[in-house]
Image (cartoon, rainbow over all chains, first blue to last red; front, side, top):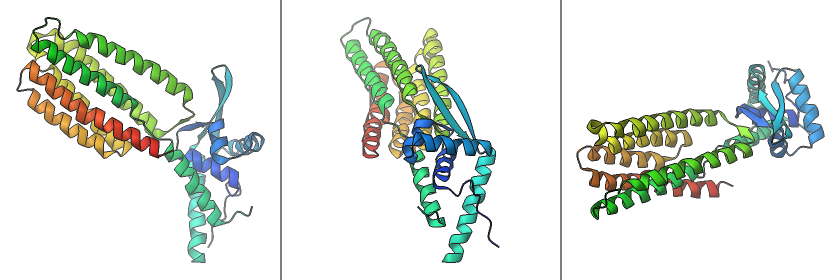
Length: 96
Length: 192
C-alpha cells in the first residue's frame, strides 16, 4: 500500500525549504532565498503556506535597523518531513 | 518542472548538503590565540633567562589584546551569521564552559603560592579538553591529535620548573592550536 505524498511538501520550493530547515536550528529569509535560488515573492508565499500548515515558525525582527525574517522548522514539520521521506523511499523501492 | 520521487530526493540531498556546508570554522581563534600564547611563552622564557624581573609582563599585554580581538571578531561574526545550526549551540556551550574554566584557573590559581606552580599544567589540561571536544564536533582529527600533545605536555609540566613549563606551553600551543589552526584554515578555503 502506497502512502500518499503530502501535497504541501510535494512541491519543489516548499520541499527545498523544509529540507534546508531540517538541518539547522533557524535560518534567515535571505539565506533560504539564496540556497533555494527562488524569488522573494514566491518564497514569501510558500513560507506562508508552510506556516499556515504549522510546519514552520516565522519570526520577524530587526538586524542593523533592517527588517529580518527568521524561519524555524516545528516538530509537526519534522514529523511531516519524515513521513514524506518514508513515502518517497517506498515509491523508489517499488520502481527498482 | 515535473516533480517525481527522484527529483524530490535530489532536492532533499542538495539542501541538506547546503546546510552542512554552513558548519565551518576557518581556524581564526585557534591561530590568533595559538600565536599570542606561543609568542608570550617564548618571550617570557627569554626574559626569564636574561634575569629580567618583570618577565611575565608580556602575558598582561598579550592576553587582554587577544580578549579584545576575540570580542570584536565575535560581534562581527554574529552580525554576518544568517543561519544558526544545532552545532553552533553546542559550540557556544563549549566555549562558555571553556572560558569559565579558564577564568577560574587564570584568576584564582596565581593568587595562591601553593598552586602557582601548577598554573600552566592545569591551563594546558583545560586547553586540551576543549580542543578534543571541539575536534570531535568539527570532525577534524588534527585538533584531537593536537589535544593529545597538549595533554602530554601538561602531564610533564607538573614535574618541571616554570622555565621548562614555558617551553612546554609553547610546544603545546604549536601542536594543539597553530598547526591544526592552519590546517582548519586550509580545509575551510577548500570547501567554498
